[in-house]
Image (cartoon, rainbow, N blue to C red; front, top):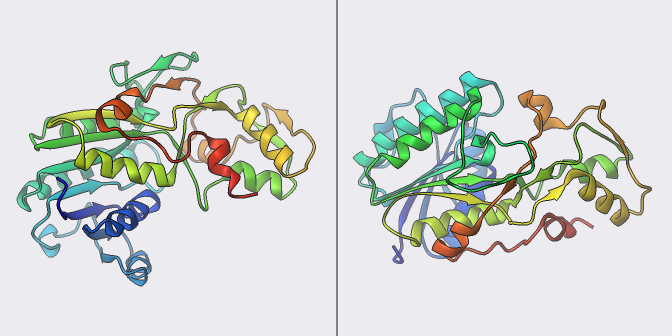
Length: 291
């Protein structure tokens, strides 16, 4: 799949839009499918073809009828298990049916390392035990459907903790002078810069073996929240933060009501099979551009 491709990105948001930019820059034809007309217009203003469409209730025949690749990068936009099931299980299965109708040979599902249940600091890889929580099980419903779909290339990309332009909570918090870091801080966080998440999608499209594969995607250098917060404070010329387990732990935990897990996600498979190397080898490098 090295020639120019027609690619549909279902859920052309934080990562999907960056992938669309990268794909267009290398000569591929991309259609971004988004929830709202405002998001559609924003993409079109960048020169990216886009349509506003409801993945759950829309008439799929309204979308153009031929694609080589379908990338499912939709998110819940918040919510609990029901929202996860709608976006990652039911939504993925609907998209798979449409992808077959439009002749796609490759289907990519941007999943999450949140499917792992380990919380003891251990190393997990693509063969490790998954599931056990309602949100994880909903995501796994979509994963299993993709892996059993029969596409020439069926890829599940389990993304680590995304950060990048416009998404750097700890930097924003410390910059505004709030130096109390709440929640768990001794756990490893497996970070992934937005630009690297996007580049991994293209690597999964053009590289690797035929058939169904799962890949963990992260920078491969997890860091504890405490270490990162200390580093950010130093870069900002501020005193060492105060670490208080009883204080609020941040927007993602508050939104999802989940504790922050402690595990190290192995990323050897994607590096070996797809020859994918992240541009940002760790969160320190990825955040350096902000200072």
